[in-house]
Image (cartoon, rainbow, N blue to C red; front, side, top):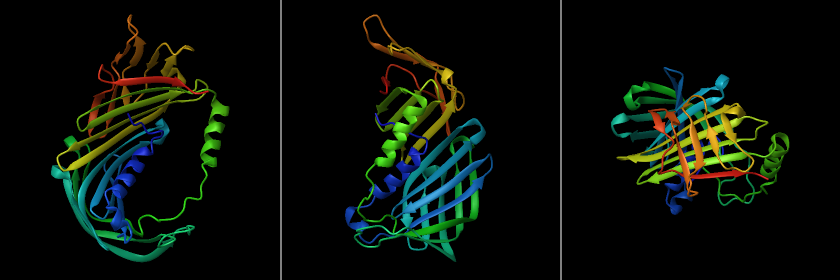
Length: 298
């Protein structure tokens, strides 16, 4: 069971998928990475990222005032060249666009002890062509002939890692000192080509955090979904002995999930808890097929 630690994890999943899709030999002479973005009706942000033969189309909607959001990313095989990108997303849509640089260039920070280039070069401009996409049941629809974008080369640097993890450790320790011990509930299952996970956590003094993720393959595309919300700690109930847990997060979640022990000691994870992903509303997050874990930090 793999659970991201924060809502931005799905973006990292896409970037990892794009890089892992490449044979190791191809990384020596990397083609540029292409990225374009535009707004769609309903408050959606559509972003297309492509590298070599992998193209991902992400649909995101954020509600900052409600501390919640959701993203669905569709990954397909395609073609990304020096100045063009194209892909087919099954019956959901397709794109075929060419990149026209504006002349604006940004240079990345230089790396240390690099094999090959020691910094990235990003060219800004516009993509022109055709992008057509219609999400499941029409939750989002895009038909565009141009969009702002960029081309970055190389996609990744082959440089030594100079970080020692100290900042990450300090952030974790600082959070623990500020909010106290954190209780975390995890529930998830894998069945065939589908993976569904939930992570809920609360410190009592701070906010409760909920994130659900889904991964599945449908025909020639892979679909990654996430939905998250920050809520009152009152939405997460448990006791000092961790003998039970009950969560009732607000939208995009609904209902309640309860973790308890049966008479024979077996864990029971049931209730009405569900999540509405973009393109997949009302997905149940409880049931006997889920594996669960309840823990508390030191």
